[in-house]
Image (cartoon, rainbow over all chains, first blue to last red; front, side, top):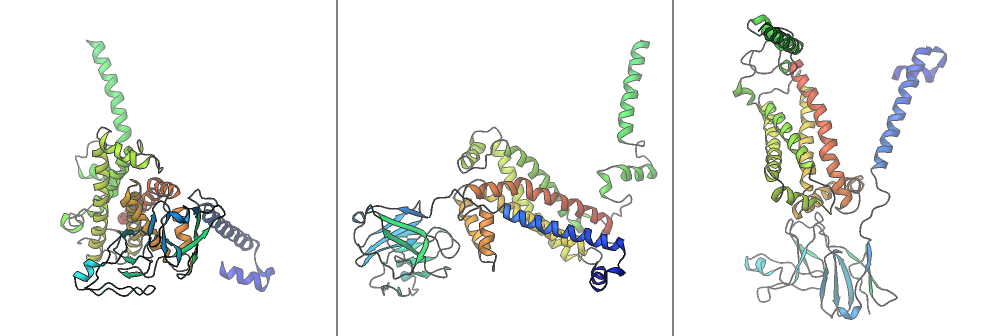
Length: 190
Length: 243
């Protein structure tokens, strides 16, 4: 076929009708196969999904006391309120996508076993022998751990969990969009 | 009396014609007829007409390929039974699985047969591969069949993985979340591959249906066709065991 194609390029008059038709036939077969492959891939790619929308409304800001951590498990989102404002965490482990769970203590067992727990790079908090209890998240799948502000410090997680967009909607409720990742310093001041 | 005799002869001749149409020769009492039996019988022709005892020595093949195929049949039959009660939707899947365990007569038995046969098949296929490797049975002229075998191993593992989601419990959902996140780490096409596998951004209704279709039709069909070629090639490439 390659030789026939070369002859077709060089001088079509030297090509027999039979090899031209064979070439045309195989060419059509190849094109049809590629089209079929393209169609197959596009067919199984959903254009519409009926999944839970990325954006949703939570409660009004007054429902979240300063210093609180609220896990909205159905949405896989955490709302933290610190003295400097609100921020939302996408509760999806950055290792392989499971849902970490909130615990008031994610460090004392490590401290007790003699392991050094690194400092939280954002808040500067550190679990020590004298103050071993620090709150945070533990992933049930492979044991990754995060501080309360989503910074990873233990296990296979390669990076902190994503902070996602949190805003105040016109009706006074918090509006969270899980599809928009924001900087980890972002805070919503209310 | 003569009437009964005539009726008996009539029935006998019909039965003789039926058996004669299935087995086109007499009982395999001589070597020659035994050879014809193997040659003309669909089930027996998986082996050549003449087989040396050393070729199919138990201690050489350990029956691992045959065991894998036997387990595939067990899985096909028990899987068919399970399909009568199982609906692949997030609304029904878990409850249907529980019903199979606690409500359906022999449901627990059939489900466990399916489950244990699936585990066993993964083990026997791996061991079969190890046996073929250790005896050098993958070498010329059997390289192509080794290649088909590796694809069959992959299909076995994919069948296990897709079936794992179907009970729709916590274990299955997170196992598939983890598995498809691994696919996401593939270069360039990773995230798109995960989207196609899941039929969305997270494991959900679309994922369950996709995995179900691949589990009960797609993968077994491809697997069966490859098995047919695999067995045919075993026969045509010749046995590797002792000469």
